[in-house]
Each structure stands twice: as C-alpha cells, then as structure tokens.
Length: 116
Image (cartoon, rainbow, N blue to C red; front, top):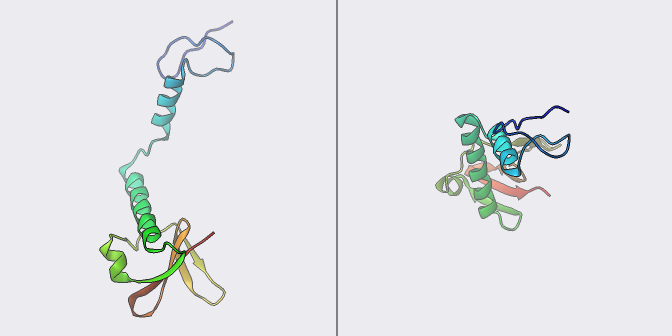
C-alpha cells in the first residue's frame, strides 16, 4: 500500500483511500488559494458590480420605482458595469445587475425594476 502526501503541507495522509488532504485546515487553505481572484481586474469588477447592485436595491425597495441619473451617480453608480441586457418585444432595453435592473427613460430618468 502506497502512502499519499497532502498537496498543501506534504504530510502523510492517514485514513480513507480516497482522502486527498491530511486535515480540513489544509483542504480549506488549498481551495481558498486555488479559488481566489488571481487578478485585481476580476476583483475590481466584482466589487463594482456589488456596489451597483447595492445602490439599485437601496433605491428600489418596492421592486419598481423611478429615479434620476443624478440620484444614481450621487450614490456612486457606474453605468459601465452590469451583468446582462434584456430587450423586450417592444424594443425596450433593460440593463441588469444580477436581479436588479434599470431602463433608461426620457429626461435622464430610469425605471428601476427587480426580476423574480
């Protein structure tokens, strides 16, 4: 029977034959290192998306409202970051940040909506 080594710390693995790590701590450390955002670009984009989502959620507590561009910008909203675009049959284009969306209207107004 051959002995396996923990990919995180190099210790001998004791226990089940399909065990990959010597402890939960090593497993967590290894997976955290492998799954972290390795580039600042990804981390910054994810932070911007989270901020945009929080702003939309704050301004739209009842799942449908109307706000101005100035109100969104005053809270730090960045119109360059969204997760999806939805175009209706009538040609209206909604921009979504996860489940929170906005539709550009006339005179710098936006309809804020929440998708279920």
